[in-house]
Image 1 (cartoon, chains in turn orange, blue):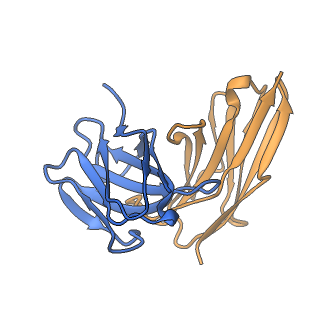
Image 2 (cartoon, one colour; image 1 turned 45 degrees about the horizontal axis):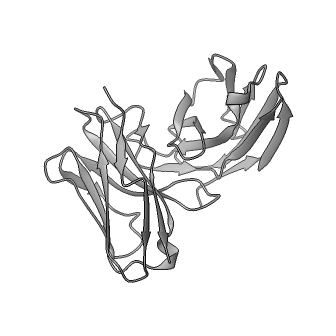
Image 3 (cartoon, one colour; image 1 turned 90 degrees about the vertical axis):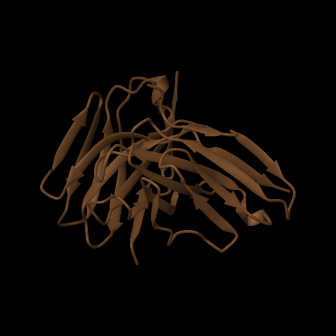
Length: 113
Length: 113
């Protein structure tokens, strides 16, 4: 069964600190892996998309890694800000058309001052 | 350009009522997706349109759910005889062409009492 598992379920950190969110997947076939940020009451917004051959991709203070052999990905947030408080969702696409997206349940990040 | 918009943002329905949820995609976007996001869960795929053609409706949970996009732009998700388990956020996303990033709307939160 295609699944995307994320950990931790929730996380609280102090402003300015770094954190890493984890994603493990069992999705076949694999097309790409995406990380989304979802603010409360808003739709998800894409942070990164990585294909099979990409190991790392950055978007500002966000850096995603992908190990296609172990089927693991991580999202590292550097120098966290209060505005980083959101749910971070890992999504694996099982086809290039994007019609077979498998979503994780998300990690809820709270950044406090 | 505005992003993807959805209306209403919040809907409360009594069990058994019919509801209609509207999605206005980004102008010119060919593909349109509907997702259901239960509380504390990641979104789950419902259906996909390319222009006015509904190419995949495999995620619709029952025949009470119906979606249309008659002119290839605005889409409506209709739920007949709503039940409590239909309570969720319904997200719409659009994409400019056959492949690429999906842009999500803010969602409609449906509560069935």
